[in-house]
Image (cartoon, rainbow, N blue to C red; front, top):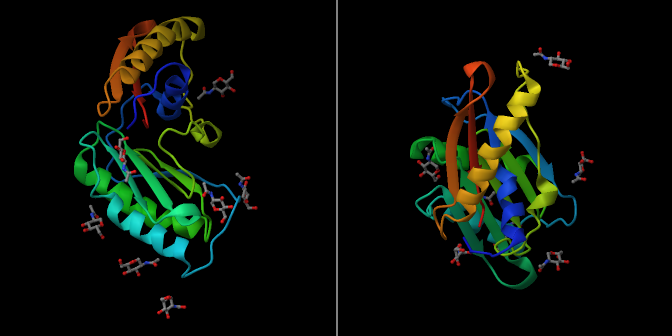
Length: 202
Ligand SMILES: *[C@@H]1O[C@H](CO)[C@@H](O)[C@H](O)[C@H]1NC(C)=O
Ligand SMILES: *[C@@H]1O[C@H](CO)[C@@H](O)[C@H](O)[C@H]1NC(C)=O
Ligand SMILES: *[C@@H]1O[C@H](CO)[C@@H](O)[C@H](O)[C@H]1NC(C)=O
Ligand SMILES: *[C@@H]1O[C@H](CO)[C@@H](O)[C@H](O)[C@H]1NC(C)=O
Ligand SMILES: *[C@@H]1O[C@H](CO)[C@@H](O)[C@H](O)[C@H]1NC(C)=O
Ligand SMILES: *[C@@H]1O[C@H](CO)[C@@H](O)[C@H](O)[C@H]1NC(C)=O
Ligand SMILES: *[C@@H]1O[C@H](CO)[C@@H](O)[C@H](O)[C@H]1NC(C)=O
């Protein structure tokens, strides 16, 4: 992960924020969403296909120690870059399972696409032949998901939520080159707890 200064980092950090009122203990990673960029394709057995395979095969061995994975194989326009991010509060075995599932599923979901991203409840995987680290282009891959339950007091909920998420954003952004996450909770309206988690890609 690269330490950036100023605004770009904050934008990147916004990518992986969960606001949920119950932290669910995942039994199995749950698939949520994928995006095929449809920008460029590759031919099976091409150099990009081999690079992508090699990148995804090696990805699970690149854990930064904090749930961040990145791998790159090949050269020039056929370079395959991949990153993966596991939610920091899941156990490593579950993260590994999520990574394995996502590498298989994303290639099936977006066949021959050079660039795609997949979200599970506990991990995400993205690959592309463009540079990922240092590039602030994850913004277009944002997916919003929400808890369908309504807060009993909307105004109070938002008043409590904002400072919590601002704090987590600053903490995650200031966490150093590896430790790029923050978690906390606050007691919201009617004594319901609001949990927050922020995690950065770089
Ligand atoms: C993975 O990310 C780290 C930190 O940004 C960087 O030093 C390293 O070169 C990256 N590795 C690959 C293979 O991209
Ligand atoms: C890519 O193409 C699929 C199938 O046509 C479409 O559903 C999807 O929205 C497209 N993705 C983007 C990012 O436009
Ligand atoms: C894939 O490429 C390799 C090496 O270039 C070749 O040996 C193999 O026959 C090819 N496989 C297919 C299915 O085209
Ligand atoms: C990826 O490479 C491995 C060997 O490293 C091979 O067993 C596997 O069939 C390849 N998968 C694809 C989709 O090319
Ligand atoms: C990614 O691949 C496409 C298609 O071959 C190519 O046009 C583009 O320049 C490549 N991107 C990079 C950053 O090399
Ligand atoms: C993930 O895949 C790797 C490589 O195929 C395998 O060694 C590992 O046991 C798998 N991990 C899990 C948790 O399925
Ligand atoms: C939450 O509020 C919206 C708007 O008032 C309503 O449409 C929706 O049904 C409510 N959801 C639940 C789970 O009560």
